[in-house]
Length: 242
Length: 278
Picture (cartoon, helix red, strand yellow):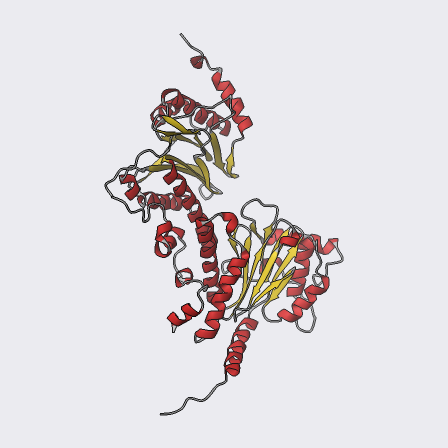
């Protein structure tokens, strides 16, 4: 009987993590950014049909990077989780923390027990009554959860892009300023060079604090272009790569 | 290995949640938690008839050229007693449709809640709205799912109407207990006062009615029904309780305000046929 080669647990986990990280880095980044009136989600996505950003519940939104079929599956599960909870209790009893926990358990269990980890990274955001009440959770491929404040960048060059946003992000940004910052960041490559991403190639949505029940709203290309123009003209937070 | 994984991670989302395929919340509920469905596992003797629960009564709707108006009175009765004076029986099913319900109140309200969620769930999962016809068919299937309860005397029948953004017309659908779906043209009414309301609407409905004409027609029909049917409540001017009236058109579902209804009611109360006493 042949003895299988011994592989240390450290090595096993590292291999899986490398595998997942490679898959995630291939996709385009997603930015989730808080602003005065809510939370905005922006990504470069030329497809009108295959969304990377989605509504989960009244005040909860979802964004993901990585393999489409894998995060689409998790998105549907999240909608079912939220709707079931809201149906059996009340709409106000559905919160992002519970959902983030369920996602974390799922990602973690797949990472350690199944043959291949999920090549996805997920952000779950819940808009509060004020900007201090906003919650943004970032979920890694291994089930790690991070409670982020203000903004999250996921995908390939997440660390670098996150650093760029961190320099300019502050409380009380307007929607236009936040979008300019997010789009400018998405258009920055590893050497720091900027390109302008045209509005039709962006997918953007907001959780709008002022709306009464379902706060999620997609921004179509026209509305987005208008906001980006007004944001670029308006403030020092501009810099959409002119 | 999978079983072990589930034991190790009890909070992991169950397999039913990640199963691809269905955009229907009702189907998901039926497979994952059937006991949460109205009429699910209520046990008891199937032949036993349940009596003594509140009843919701009359709903009316009229079709306009480019939308509908739907209205419901506010009364719920239990036998000969008035159970509720403020009951709401007309709801927004989603942005472009309205649902009104008559029959056993508890069952009916559950049906509406589930139907609203069904449409929202589809919209979130598919990223697009169901067609008006699709919504009407879905509701038919849900009414049929209620047949077990209906056989035990707990009947709830909806009246469904909405605006179809594609064809830019308003349409009305009625249902029977086995889930049969019938498209109604011009106007329709369900509930205990519906005979009288329909008689009234027959005289009031005209082609090409405006929204305000439509609102006046449905309020008028409800007042006529309340005149003849003790289970239908008329406008209660003293307490300021007015019917729930909603319009659905290009702008989506909108409730007509009580202030506006108060004016309509005041005008109708002045009509000569309401003042003959001898």
